[in-house]
Length: 293
Image (cartoon, rainbow, N blue to C red; front, side):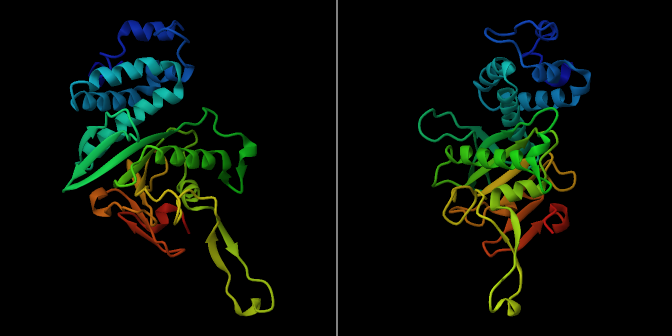
């Protein structure tokens, strides 16, 4: 492992040797094969470097962060989903501070609703809940793809949003961060469909149909609605769904009780979706980059 990665205090050379040999690193079940791959294979040096930098950032958050995150990373080698959840929290936290200049602190209460981070900038406070979209190495089964849409992935995104909402306080400005570890990666179309419903063409029928105009609408499958999940102010996607080569993109919820100002998330690409159907505004990216045409 790269000595500058920051992870050498968590996974020593002896640890990595044990993982390569299929030996247990912690008590209980052996490490997940893909976690072993991420930690030991030369082709994953970029992942380890990014995770190491994020871990180094977390160590500076508070006196307990090094112990807590180190313990979680070691303990979660048995679960790909658990390991990538911890990695996602670290990388999202570092991105928000290093790239968007937020001040960040961990939320440590263990009672009631508990998001992962509290971030602040310009007098604005936002709570952040991180969820990971973890797919298989080979991608979704063929029968899960309908009309070009990965049905299982869309279902997974809806489930992640539902789970995130349980940790959000209704009186806070809230950001749900989706970390995209899926292979193949999530697309913009899929995330938008999961949040707001699948697009369909409504064609009028009946006596007055000839005078009516077909319209593009979204069905009721989305997780963000006028009276549902309104505590979600904005959804951030970190990974393969962002327009262009940005590290993250943000999709604002038009139904949020407490919205998050787009200015706080500049210069990242953002999509401001109006409560009026079909109205979209793109910031810092062409509207075509979102593949919503």
